Length: 199
Ligand SMILES: Cc1cc2nc3c(=O)[nH]c(=O)nc-3n(C[C@H](O)[C@H](O)[C@H](O)COP(=O)(O)O)c2cc1C
Image (cartoon, rainbow, N blue to C red):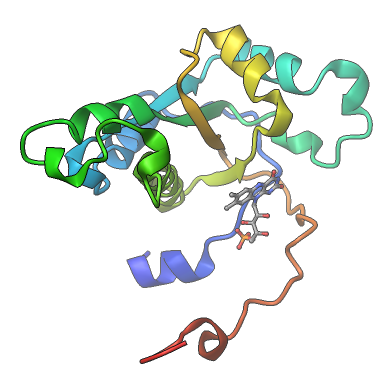
């Protein structure tokens, strides 16, 4: 599939077959994901990789306790063989922007001084690259939020306090077709999104 075809045909998957990923494949995808551009080449993103049945179960036990599963709209999401929780490390950016070639920006001292928190930009780029690499490998993915479960996930898996969660990417072989609630929203036309020359 060409990149153009991939980007146009990609949709989120919410139903996975429990088939495991080929050995080594997830590492290849992560290796692609870490090659995204990053501010100051800081590369301050981290991947919490849960790719054993035990680790995946631990994630779901933490975020979706069994009594709530009956009402959960996407039961086929729980069979994805791999989950990658993407984190951003603001401290890495403060450190990087304190280095001599960046110190003049004044961004090395205070995360609040950043008009755009580049750690979230870079980690989001990495999360997207991971998704596109997985789709390119013939797999399905779902990016979903951690919401109020972020602290519980951090505690369960020993994530350092200062890490900022970006989201979780479920990766696996596609099962059936399950539409997300937002799927029917039409794509906004290009003319509405583009503000050429002025807004
Ligand atoms: C930041 C972000 C958060 C998302 N959170 C969820 C989520 O919690 N649950 C879910 O089912 N889909 C989630 N999605 C997937 C979107 O619903 C989906 O990308 C959107 O409806 C467009 O559909 P498509 O990706 O299949 O083209 C999220 C996507 C993004 C980018």
